Image (cartoon, rainbow, N blue to C red; front, side):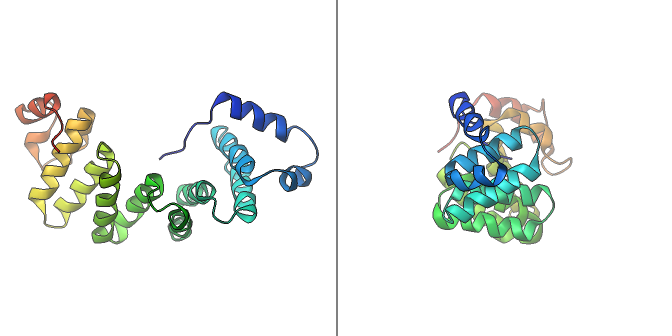
Length: 195
């Protein structure tokens, strides 16, 4: 999943800001953006509980903070609470409709429960990020599974052109000639992406 890394300077500033006062004081004196940085640091340390607390405090201070909502969605999704994850992704998208990580993660959830909606979401992702190989790959798989095999193949081929390592993830039997080492994959891996 997409969790962005924070620059070292911002990280140092976050550490400095969090090093003073009691926990309640820290939260009340910090801006939403500072709380997001604290949450990101906690995620880097694999402390989901501290991250969750920081992101929750951030959205209380700034309900339109799309990055805090996205990260809450990410945590809920990691915990298997997809309904609440989708709600958080939607809140992120309400503030920033073109925020690709929230769109992409929504697509991964809907891919299981509502493939047609997931296809639509992945189409939006690749429109915003034409070189997003993972989105093309997931889009192609969903299309192939829902009877649009030719379009699915085209999107999987596009994904492999963008990232040749994806060829080994094509399900056995779906498109055998796209398997690693096949003539089609070797040619696709060296071709330039199509527009």
